[in-house]
Image (cartoon, rainbow, N blue to C red; front, side, top):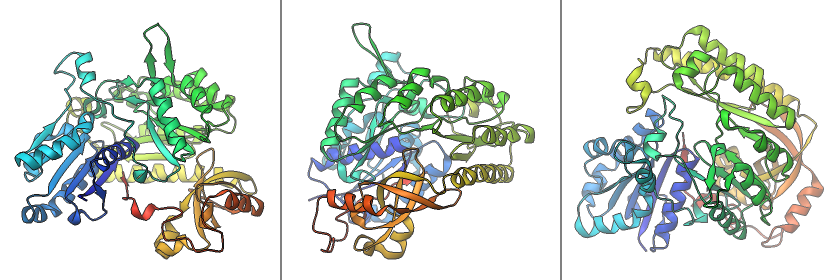
Length: 500
């Protein structure tokens, strides 16, 4: 069997893209390997949101240059957003690459591999740029191929991403996504529902609906009807086997009352919302073209908390954006304190060629100031997160067990699958919980009593009756038989996903 290696950097959308690429190649007879040098086809699925993600790929390509020269029959490919944005740069910096393919053309990867093998010529596949044709033609050049799933590429066998939306029309000045992923378009709700049912039949218990601005999802039916995200949630609620429904990432202006009510009323909907604010100052938000004010964002947070008192909200912030003053930066901490976010993902601004910010503004905040502001804002969020976790001491929470904790895997390796170990999972509000338990609990929902807390993690004890019931319900060998390494949670045979 030919062997395939694929490395993924970037967001959840890229993780899903890699799963779909692997699914299509597995049907061609390819076998996954975690060693790029043993592979016949080596693929890198790339991200362009930050410079760090791009340089990581170029570094990996550089380490393979000699290997490719020694084995010219092997196929080396660069896929995804960086390939779409910087096709000429990729070819110049890594001329030994055989395939350069944008995210809208990933369905063609098997064909491109065969053509590269047959012709020994470089293969290119890109969607149209927004200025190259009308909206309909550009939209049609971004293909959807989501039904081609491969369970082996999922983070866990019982959790899966489901794309409901492609592209983005928000055009934030710092963001390259609208250029590399094309116009916003919603998938047909019937197709999404069929995919969720397929996942449920494969044992999936939790689905996360994906979109660049997922709560902007719309699908216009030919008879004048329109489906929105709230409608999708109600339909997925009825799918047998699915226990939890999440969605990311939401845009503040599209957090409508009907969606908030759906999250409140649907038992399977996780009471967790990821709604990036990006900044706490109106001038900076206007410069970023975020289309809302700080007052609007605060009102949105209040509506969510009034409707769903237990809701957990997380956010994103960019520090050091063009022209940011100390006074403007301080407003970000004020917004975190007001909103009391569960957590915030904080990024230093990195100019992206092709964005409006790169054309209109000067990247004038020194790197050392960006680093300091990044650390200062992390400290504010850490204080809020620690207080949130302290309030949960003594409570009992339902945890979907995802697998051994990172510490357990680092310390015990495969032994973590053989005996009592430290496990990790998430609550319905997306809080991370760590506790001791048998690996057979992986994939089950158990009740955990919270006894300790850090700013980022809750620590607890699984209730004995819950653990016993979960073990009895799990299919597999009797409890007194050893579990083969990787049998309960075969992450060791999955490729590690380098989220950035």
